[in-house]
Amino acid sequence: MSARPGRNSTLKLSLLLTIIPFFGLSCAHPHPRDYSRLKDLVQLEDQKTPLFVFKESKGEFDPDIRKASIEYFENHPALLQKIKTDLACERPRWRLARVNQRLLFVPEQVQEHASLFESYCKDVIQEVLKRTNLPNPYREIQTLSQERPEISDRGGITAFVVNNVAKEFEASFIFSNERQEELGINLGSKIFLDELGSYTSDISVGKDGTCDFVHDGYTLWRDSAKNPYTVLMVPVEETLHIALRTSTERAIKEQIERSGVNQTKDVEEIVEEWTAVEEAIVGGVVHDLGPHILATRMITLPPGLIEKDLKSRRALKRYRYLEKGVLFVRNMGSLGAIGIYKTDPAAFRNFLKNPPGLAGRLGPSLFP
Image 1 (spheres, rainbow, N blue to C red):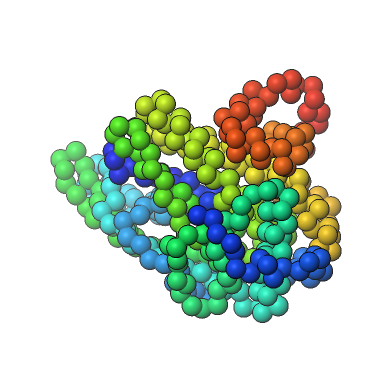
Image 2 (image 1 turned 30 degrees about the vertical axis):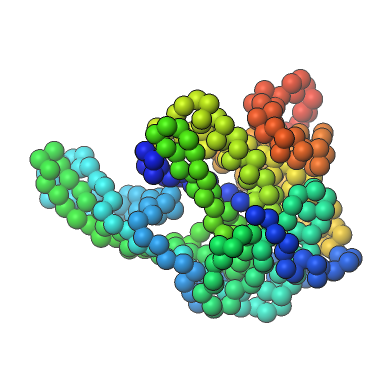
């Protein structure tokens, strides 16, 4: 998450988000197909080549690039020491002078995998929308081969299915000392991303506290992972994020404008909190619907994979409310929980932070 103060301040919610009929869902099978073969296909080793360009951009120093840059300097202490020596300064300041980046993808090269996973995505999305009464946010679901996709801005989201995703960047950093002496360092790298799916909202906050949101017209979905449950839930999870994002944005906007904050740090804290809240409602519904979705598609997974997925998320701050979100949906049902979140997301957040009578009713942790 990154931000700059003032009217052009931009904060990104990257969640693991106009509505028009989706061309292709009507072709889904009236009765779920046998997708048992997917259990093995989605566990095939991730591919690193061939790489093709998805899109290019300039001037965006996003969290992935920031993390990779810091790790590079930390892992090359000799370079860092040379910078300190040349500037005669033990704690040099640094700033980003320039950055260019390309988002790259590796297409799925196993045709059986590509065809079956795309069909599975369309099939389960149809069921999720039916069981939650959520509107269809998609314009298209497309498996990429080697073509650079055309990203439409005509409304609706396109989900692009790929095998792997990477970022390639070139950045120029300026290090300086107290005497304003400067030293330039150029850094280039390629990093493969861990996320299986994400959808981004950009929020611009003005000095007067008003907010505007801008959305990507696409989402990228990877079709492989070590834990097959995780990747098989990607179309379920991302559909919920996209369909519920409007409610999250409304809550963020109301809180920012009500509180009158416009400093980057304050806005980031509000966005980060609501990111965790949205993960809780989405995670709760996925946990509720997932087992049925898999069972009706003849997918039998080894015991413990669902719990392993939930436990791994528990270690991340953005999933700090997930356990309570699972409990809330378990008690209310997916339809009821979604209805509350769409109507009053603040009420759902209040439950997560101060669950009434929760002590003594939780029993053993959901994530032992």
